[in-house]
Image (tube, rainbow, N blue to C red; front, side, top):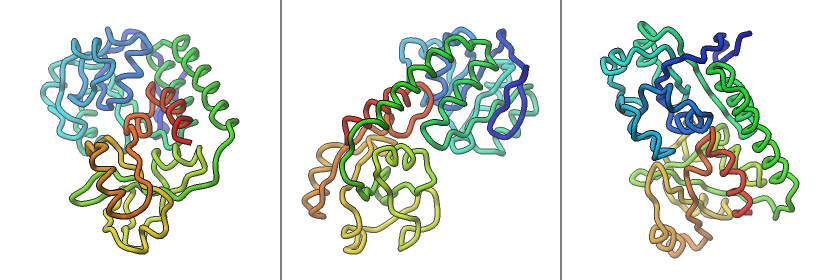
Length: 261
């Protein structure tokens, strides 16, 4: 049996895999599936679950990877993500890592296929199945709950320069589960998935509330209070991990969404 990743590459199950994960949210999922003992490398941003990742060697960041350190660890599998890891780096690693497992969840429901892929490739289908059942239950509960009127929200991930997210991001898809939409790219915001923007009257007029994420920029309640006074619209501090991390944290993220509605 084969398991197909995000770029159509097929993988045979390998319960004896030596894994390097370059994706923080997936490091957490692999550990939660009972695979911490198979992990020989992770990024410095892989911080969950803290008690398990401390024993796993760091190999740099999600983009500034230490190629030679990974080579010395002799992994059989590398877990990467299309958005988080740079293709030239992954191509260099593919020269000596036999199996590159590519992921690309784009909406909450994609976590089910993600769990199936990782559970299948690494021989932990039972743990992945339990997680998927819990995830489906939480997603159904979220979709069944009464929701308020649709809202236009500006989700901020950075300042100096200010940056937001476009509609084709995982974050926007999470917010869409509440009936919340983010501004279309353009109208001064650029065409990138994470465009820069400047505050102006038109922008403020066309949003119902602003969300300040706790990551990657560490916005705080003080930032939210100051911005709310400045623009005269509701500003809410939100947990960036809960809204942007797929994998294990997405399960808690669905419950978190219910608290925002």
